[in-house]
Length: 311
Image (cartoon, rainbow, N blue to C red; front, side, top):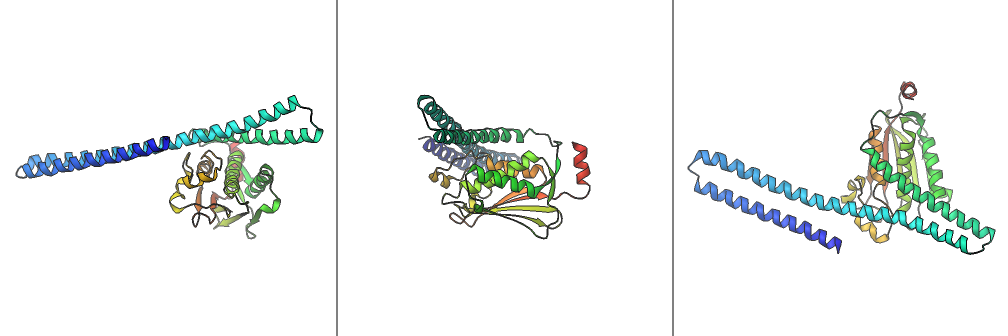
């Protein structure tokens, strides 16, 4: 029902805008016909009507964008509510079971593991929302350290395997053999968040079972490139740039009921650009998997000293 109302609002905005533009053009043509002999009136009237037409077109575009933005906000709120409510309900259920029933030690330990997993999921959601709110307000002169980025990636892979209870063979990690020192000057927490979100997306959008290819290499002398490829749902070309927007989720994927807030890849690109890099997505289409590339500047000579001076 809510989706139908929004679609009707978009159609109404476009229709009303088109009608007003058509009316304005008609008035403009009529004005020209009536006053074609008066250069002064034509000189005043034509620019006025052109500005009026441009204003109506821009107003219609802004209205449509606002409706779509509100739709993304509502989807985000619904997703966050679900992401928070589900683990809380699960933890409460297991606590009530432990309180009311006598269970064996093995069963109690099993319940403890489940509750711990749910609490970690809850904490991850809260941290993701908080970090998304920080992105637009954070100062550029934050503390940065000299880091070996391959160690950061390995740590994130271990965390992902543990979080989703995956076999080590699920994620195949390779490093460019010609690369000497894969170092970067950056915020450790932010870079870890970016890599974890890329891996998290790759796992979640591989419903038939994740098989990830993770490669860390060097482009030229100044750039590092982390490439994460999966064989999951894939992305249609029109959505490849939009997935990095705040709250955006590919509509076709929602039929699979994959949980998420629409903030993961937004954080990835925001963090990459704060570090002087970027993030891009590649896919041959739905059903053909997705590749996310995280580009970061390498730490050059002298960066280690500057990073130490910032501490």
